[in-house]
Amino acid sequence: MKATTLLHNLGQSLWLDNITRDLLDSGTLKRYIDELSVTGLTSNPTIFEQAIKNSTAYDADIRNKFKEGKSEEQVLFELALADLTRAADLFRPIYDQTNGVNGWVSLEVSPLLAYDTAKTLAAAKDLFARAGRPNLFIKIPGTKEGLPAIEEAIFSGVPINVTLLFSREHYLAAAEAFLRGIERRIDAGIKPNIGSVASVFISRWDGAVMSKVPEQLRNRLGIAIAERTYKAARGLLSSPRWHRVYSAGAWPQRLLWASTGIKDPLASDVLYIKALAAPFTVNTMPEGTLKALSKQNELGEIMAADGGDCEEVLAQFAEAGIDIEMLAARLQDEGAKSFAKSWNELMAVITSKGAALEKATIAGANP
Image 1 (spheres, rainbow, N blue to C red):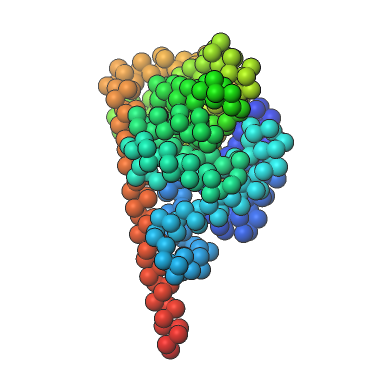
Image 2 (image 1 turned 180 degrees about the vertical axis):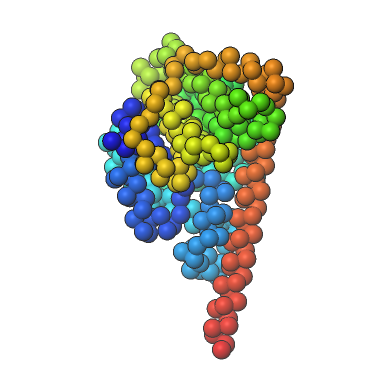
């Protein structure tokens, strides 16, 4: 049996961390759903930058939208919404069958808004309304400024994928924002079943310390952080406060493992996938990682609900001079800046493509 099927049967959701028009047009995404147990999809500015830059599938739309006088950002969101609503429709039967547990796709607000609460909230509401699909998450970063927007968005009925979380403390803050939004809905007499996942990034931890720790600690920090966070999530989800909202009809916010592609060329392609096998979580993985996993036929040990030896491992990193709390803050800040950089590069790609297509149109009209 394929390892993808084994993970699915374990109770972990496999989501694809990629979206391109070619994936949709070729039927590849549908095949991943049918054959590799893929039950959802995530995207980010870097993914769209690569998709648009490396394909001609968007050219006609870009040319037409610029002719209509639209800005680069307007063009981008219309392209993204076109792709993601198609993907949402592909996943809709899964969403319906699982009562909203799976079948989700994700679209991120502009990363340039990561530190602006009001504009983040307004953008989240607008994008969700424009998509017109119940199974579309809006991604909001779990920054200090993003947390109030997450609470307000949940209260307003907008499903949220909280992104750029790097530690147990980041996760707990995001879970608290989600819970406050849900409790406010209950107090207001509004249905509280609003979907959410909390995305904790893994491999960037190991990339950050690879040259700074002994060989025996190589590629162990991200997994230890995940184990510590999983323990906290299991405790939180079984707490009396969360049980009260479940009893009122709320859906639990699930933990999602993100950044699960390897950074170390010497490591196994499925290092993080096997280490992060845990029931009632999501693992969103790059396409290459998904393909590598599909060739495996075993998983290994399931992640320990009590965190295993994570604290001992983290203590070893502390002894090696790694300040976990400081590094988590740095990684979140760097992640926000990285997505903003990709966003600006994406705008430049759309601008240059639009100019080139216009030039080609004029040249064709005047041979």
